Image (cartoon, rainbow, N blue to C red; front, side):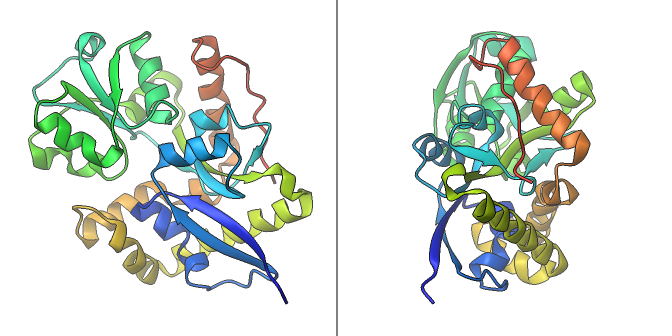
Length: 279
């Protein structure tokens, strides 16, 4: 039987690797679908999704606002910051108000981290895009006053003597009493409803499998854990692969809608977003 190839894009990070462990190691019966993985940083995946290049991909929730014509948001696979999330760090103790005149390195303009920072600062600021895994070093060297960090940098920035300015997940929680929805998995609409539903089920099974076989999935994820030992990588995976990842649930869905609504009202996203999940 010739299988239909489904290309899946996700980040080369321990949480995404953990989530896709079962698919990457053929632990699931996928029938006539064959999943091939392409690992790239989230901003590259956001840009590829704008062009509709991947059948399934992880994207930033910010980017999803520009993808509704091509992709549906899957109910599983989200990364949710519940009182934690992307951070702004600096070489010296810095107040949030000082960031408006600071030079800030960011991981991409379509990331949810960038969207949250714009909402937090309430206006424009000076920024430059850098690969997410180069931002801490660039701030440490003094190339920027501050850096907007995602992924494992949230747990390792203190190793480089940097100071926390604001945790945007905590800021969002205090503002809305909701978690900050950072990223999700999307499926291309032109695959058709039956195939989209099958993919949704298989991806949820992959997450369930990893959570049920945590040791083996973590072993696989460790190869993507930069500057983290097993204990720290396990902690990081637990932050972003959990019950929220199995399903957004009513509160998680409300968080997505609230974030994109506020982004529209602030003029960051040009059009209102009618958020729909591919259930």
